[in-house]
Amino acid sequence: MPDLSGKVAIVTGCASGIGAATVRRLRSDGADVLGTDINEADGAAVCQAIRARFVRHNVSDTAAWPEIVAQATQRWGRLDILVNNAGVVSQASIEDVTDEIWDRTYDINIKGTMAGCRAAIAAMKANPGGASGALINIASTSAMAALPGDVAYCSSKGAVRVLTQSVAAHCAKAGYAIRCNTIVPGATETGILNDAEEAMPGLKAAVAATSPMNRLADPAETAAAIAFLASDECPYMTGAEMLVDGAMMAVHPGF
Image (cartoon, rainbow, N blue to C red):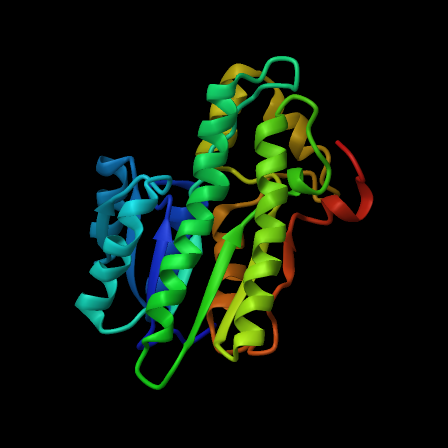
């Protein structure tokens, strides 16, 4: 189990699914955690139960990001980990997608991720002992094998992958000990998938069947991979993608 004692983390989208599991995992590994979400009731409940701090924040509000980061650094004196987990699906094909759907999806999935990385790097550069930290961005297997019915989600998650690579290369060339990696979850038991199931009954079973393991992932399984990337166990791992997909991409180039 990674030792995150003395580390400080921010986790977005903490009210449910992978975000909630990540807050719990990082706290259990010893980190101090600030969770954020637009779902104030559930987010606060998740954090309160494990003695983490909660702040309501819409990640697409880029102007608010420096204040979110400041709440962590002012309370604990540093920032070591950012998990950009918040995201939305749109459930619209190229023929159905509207400008409003496209903009909202990109504002949350990619602009929010960019703004989080930007604000976190500024804080991590000021850490006692010099620039250091771990940025972990959550993509999706849908960025690697696109879904025909969700053009905005798939393309925005594809952008997250390349954003991560650019951030990683920038930090490495600048001489910062700040790593940036992508987690690529497969079909996971999350609120997003449950919402999609309501619109498309039978979707969860169909998606689970695409995995050789013939099941959905538990969010805690993804959180375990996030905890590894957040730890000091992989100092040379940056700009990488870690699949947590039950071998889905190994055998399914498309869904």
